[in-house]
Length: 85
Image 1: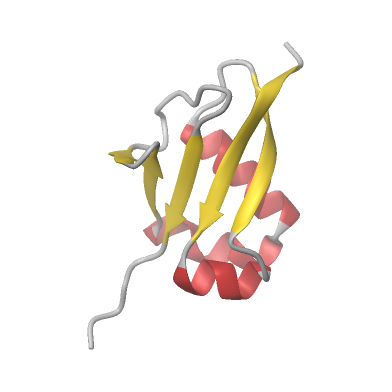
Image 2: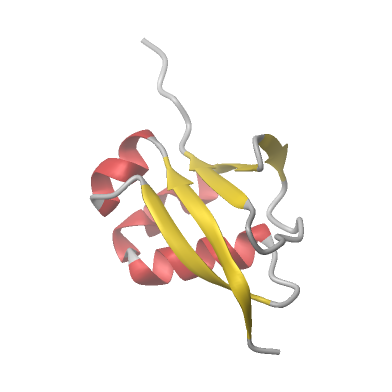
């Protein structure tokens, strides 16, 4: 196994506010999924954990499920639900 490279994780809206950053480089394990990358981000920023059940994911600008595989060099966006107003 071991690290295979990195994935760029983009945090939107309230996630960026809570984490204090909009962009992270996360080490990528071979065969990692969207959900595993998300879990690694949440481990680094526990304050994001409450948002996880409602998150949406975009992998290289296309909506993705949490079981989708992530390739090195990809960009994964974590998108919280947008409150209407």
